[in-house]
Image (tube, rainbow, N blue to C red; front, side):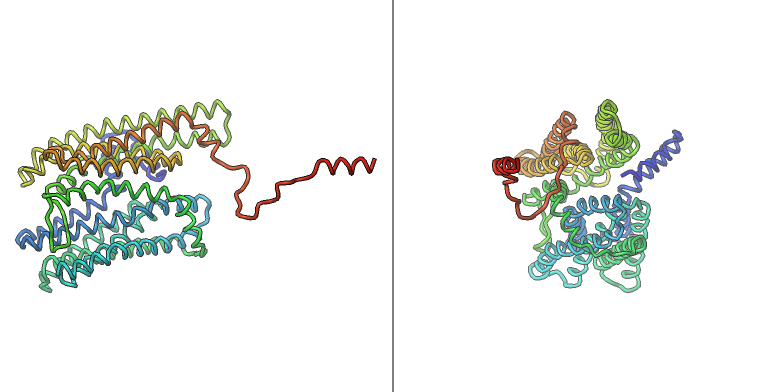
Length: 489
């Protein structure tokens, strides 16, 4: 994350109103701009092609296809990207740049295998059971597959601090999708939903190709060390499980309500719950600025404290190490409190704004009754994720794994219980799950603070671990040695 902090320090350093606005804009660009661009272009395409005039079956089929592409695309890449980011950071630190391409190709193979395992059986069911046209099924699978590749390559550009290029590539890809959708419908007279889906596929293909070209332009040497990458997955399996369970916890309460009376089934294949899913989407946007605030604050302040402590450990005195540790944890507490305060004010303003505006745009009734509890849940969830990232800073993989397990399981169980309450409590699942996950991470951070010296200085090994035959336990015979000394005397 250090690359963002340097830029933000330059922007915020002038301490003026304009630079503060520019700083927030830059933070937005490097974090959530790609997702916002995709959503904005889809809305524009629907308006230009009179999407609302289509039949309910066509609209629901397209909406479900895009929804599933993004949800299961995130779930597919979530187990691998965290370990790959860790491997890339270590390789760049050691300046072994020849190992980056083997990591890229091995990671791509794993993502492709995971995408096939999830996507192909679903598409076969969609075609044979749902009776959806084969061209539309194939276009949906291509969109899912290409989004997985685009998300995967994004992790490399993020490690390389090329955040601007990520947003630029998504902008180019979505503009191409907009133009092609108009050409397919107006000039080639394609069916609207098929044209939109194929245009989206081509835009995602352009994004993935541009990301691949940038990675290949940076790294031209291939060391061929593919097994090293696999060893990292075995060594840091906790990172894989943590990230996957966190993303699954974000979605599992939706999956629960897909089994209730609120669900809608499309083509005997897709299942969704429009009021609950829409309330979830609005709740996420209500609290999405937390990620921007966290990156801005941590990059500008906490990272410097962490760096100062690391330098003190390398060459400082005992009192310097202790002082740097106290300052670092004070800064950590301050950042969590500031994030909570600022995000609470932003979420509160957006909450009242959405409660006022949404009924005017047709999103009232059940959606607006579910929304408040979900908004509270996602507010706590983003605070919990900030604590998980702090646990990553301290290399506490056990604590982060425990947090994600508690979060996912408690969200799942609480969502099942919430289905038996009135609709205003339907969002109780994510709220309780996020609170329990936040509590677990907070207790773990406090434990690390109290045992930080042991955590830092007692984790290594004096002798290198080897896999070989154990040497004999007998080193020498004391009595035989004394007998030989007497004979010589």
